[in-house]
Image 1 (tube, rainbow, N blue to C red):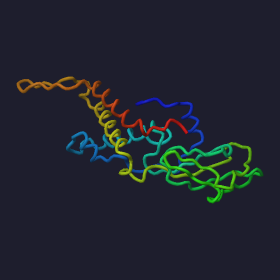
Image 2: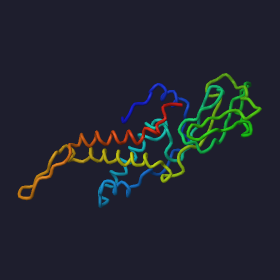
Image 3: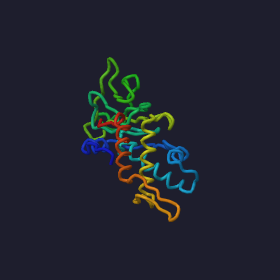
Image 4: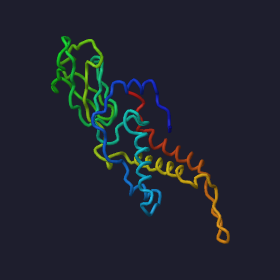
Length: 223
């Protein structure tokens, strides 16, 4: 783990969220990773792709360290009632598809007209009643209010460069750990010469500090 999150708040957030459409594609491509690691062939392309997915998954979505959506995805947020304002997690928010609720009498969920609420912001998005309106009464029951929304950056190129660079550094660190020679401190060939390089643990610590600095401005503590 790169830095701790507040587990109680995170678990509370996860309880009311359902992933409807997962993201597709990758934030950084194989060619970018190969260039970053100065790899000239495709012999370990499958490994690099796997490491990239692992690094991205550690940051993306409600379970990620950033608490934000990196690529386009759809979620549903369920609430027990209408609060004063609905705080939307997983920025950036692209659009709110619907706000629905269970009427006091029960039955089929009612969809709130878009004219009766307003979405404010994107990176710290919230939904409030439109001017002159108030939230309707709901049935007193869990998940009586549901908000379906789209979130994430438009595409991989739109993901902030510090996040992309952090993923490349994370992949490089994972690749170093996967390398069979990662525990070596030097290499020597009789009659040819000896090569010495940094202790991999030192490289790992340096990378972690840089990754932390790159990601910290984009971290969402809670919603």
